[in-house]
Length: 377
Image 1 (tube, rainbow, N blue to C red):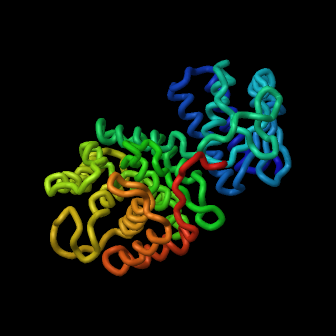
Image 2: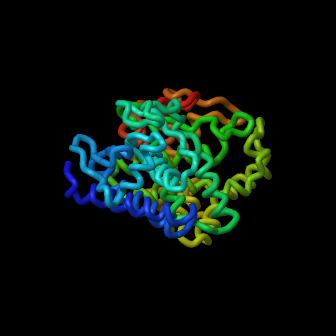
Image 3: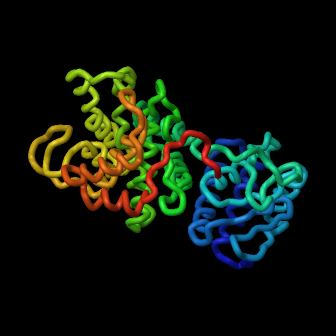
């Protein structure tokens, strides 16, 4: 790898721009936010092409996985390298959304003399502070993801505002969660952000979005359709914000009136999403359809036969499967083998059979593993 690589050159330029803006403007200033966005986009291009990148802040150099080192250039980033040496920061390996955000945060902290963000330990001693090459134990990769999605729900539900940058961070975070369904089982948020031991609708929606994202990858979707599918899975149940919490945690059977309240959430969600500028139209369609059944039936009850959107068919299967594998107020989680058998039976009645096969055979062939403890990085 050399300094003439255009992708690496974009990262160097964007990193220099962020360093300069961070030295001139306070956190949150539009110039600084824009510089951070440019760096994120440049890093995304490198990670898509190469899978990993190492920034040696102390020595002022950079490389992609498997390549040689290239200098960051004293003229562009000499100040950053000096600040890193003074604060004891060594190498940062950028290989996912969390590390990308950490690099942006770290540059700002070095520029402003602020406390440094927590630096996780990385294989190969490539990341450290204080010259030790060691940091705190790896964080639970689900930490903060439920809260991030909850914040997005809140912006839409209360302010009818869709923050694109936060939505992109959410999608990148979902993409970086552990479990590929091939080597490592796909994980669930499980009981995180639980109410009385039952996963909240937000935690469940994070699970649905993750499984939908993996299905989109298997289907070979381009980046923008994949983003829309992932966001649609994350937002399909947003209408649940109008459902009283006691109904979500009720131990017994819902009364007809209570069930009618819960069944209104697809309509409420679709109305919120369609009334919020910037939300992908697909998200509103999926919110409306995700409890409808092929050939009619389901809810909302509108009568007649309809052909569900392909994204809805994917999200329906993800929704049912993750619900089966998670605890509910009225039952514990259903074991994997039984959950897969139930899903297969549903494919013969109302779920899309081809999509069920996709999920069970190609997206999560090892099943869905609830998160009972922090997942090793």
